[in-house]
Length: 262
Image 1 (cartoon, one colour):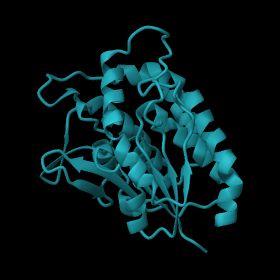
Image 2 (cartoon, one colour; image 1 turned 60 degrees about the vertical axis):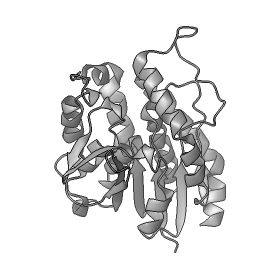
Image 3 (cartoon, rainbow, N blue to C red; image 1 turned 120 degrees about the vertical axis):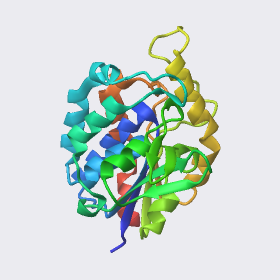
Image 4 (cartoon, rainbow, N blue to C red; image 1 turned 180 degrees about the horizontal axis):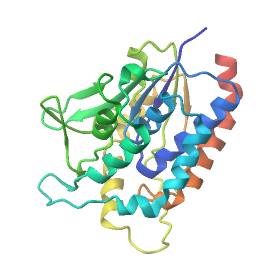
């Protein structure tokens, strides 16, 4: 049997589509052997790697809700980032707990970036919470995370859809899930003609800057799942259910192809 690896990419609110993909794979009896995640992909991947069923992760996401997520924004003096991240870390801890990478049921790697050297940093040992927190730290928006004498930010800067990482973990067959749409696809704000807010603009700029890396990453995958998400902004955490549904739709379209190749 081929060892199946999932590469779950970053994409802020759009990353919740990973949950829908996991629901379909689980429903079809497709067993995941290892996961590499960047940013939102690291967060969702960590929950699944613990052994939480996709349905339970979906319920967690829907129960948290966007209003609670907004309340977790703790503004910092803008020396290295607008959001300090303590409240978000506390939320992650309440969900993920104090589990170590070695205790996970599915091997997991979280991808981050050393903001000083520009190097990719793959975190796969120690507390899972630290790996996820580092991987989701979008530059400027979040303050960098200190990890073993390094200052880390979002892994999307160097490896937005970590196909190469999961290959190095030993995957023979890689399913990549990309939630960053092609260049030229206009961001369709849920607020109609209103201009995007500062955080929405910063998020969108970050993903525009990393798009060329996305296409390079995906070239190494056996299957690429790309949910259709242009109508969902990167900061649209009030559209959790819609993001998840789009992930499910995209995975269903490729499920027969996945089964044939496996």
